[in-house]
Image 1 (cartoon, rainbow, N blue to C red):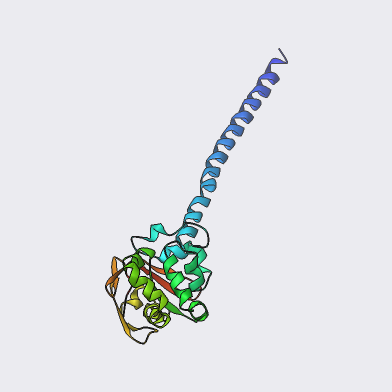
Image 2: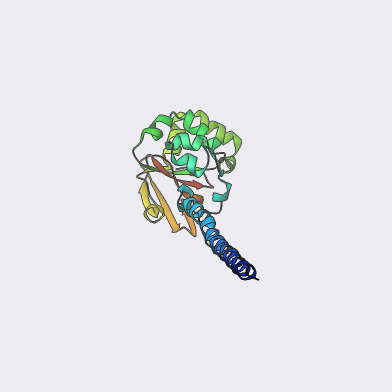
Length: 206
C-alpha cells in the first residue's frame, strides 16, 4: 500500500514527460519544414536575376541552358568569342572570321550587335552568299552594318542609329515585338562582356 502511491506519481510524471517530448518534437518538426523549403525560393530568385532574366523574344528558349553558349556563358566573354559558342550563330562567326573582325569586335569598349542566325544567312541564295564571303570589303560593310556603338537596352535601342559602316539602321517596337531594318528580333538584350546582342532573322544588306 505504501508503494502504490509513489508508483502512481512516477507513472504520472513519466507520462507527462513523454507527452511534453512528443509535443516539442511535433512543434520542432513544424518549424523545420518552412526552413527546409527556404532554399528553393532563393534558388529561383538567383536564377531569375541572372543574365537570361533581361532577355526577351520568341527564340530565347533555343539558347542553350548551360555551357559557353548559354546566357551565363556568353555574359563572361567578349562578343565575337561569345557568339562563337552559340549554336544559332555559326555562319555569322564564320563571316566575322573571314572579314578579320574578331579582334575588332572583341576589343571594343561597348557595342550593340544585331546578329543574324544561321537560318537568316540561309535565306540568301548560295551563290550570292559564297560571293559575299569571298569579297572581304563587301563582307566587312555588311557585317559592320549590323553593329552600333554603345550597349543599348531595349528602350535605348529603339530609334535610328549610325552603324560602324557609317550608315543608318532603324529599330522599331518594344519587347513584345521588335524589328531591325526589315528583320525581326528573335532574342534580344543578350549581355556579353563588352556588347549587347539582338539575334535577328534577316541579314541586312546595306
